[in-house]
Length: 149
Image (cartoon, rainbow, N blue to C red):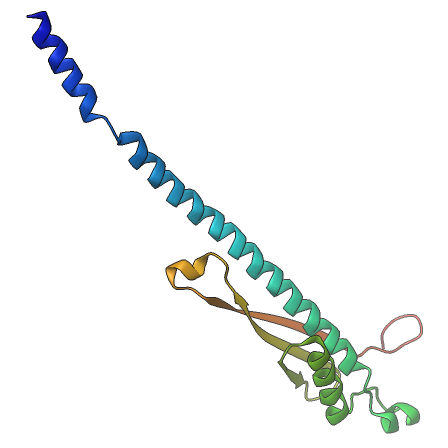
């Protein structure tokens, strides 16, 4: 009777073989997925920050292109739309980015929107090869000695 009990006990132990390998494989896939999300999420965040910075600097550059005629006579401080567009596009070109410039009707506020893509490192395994990234920067023209007028 003791022999059959030992055989049953040995058979039960044999049924558990390979269980840890399946568990390890599942945990490894899950951990790689989490690492992939962290790496690609961080990469997209960094690309978004860069797009924002480029857009802000392009808007700043465009804001320097003021309409000299109005500024000299003191009637208004406004941008020259063509010169502002050219300045922003020149900055974007040097930064290796592309974007759109929008100038307000009163020509005192410029908004630059930069659109780029982030090429994924890990998520391409699941079919996501790139993610779109958008950055935006606005410059408002202000003038005055102690406070904006």
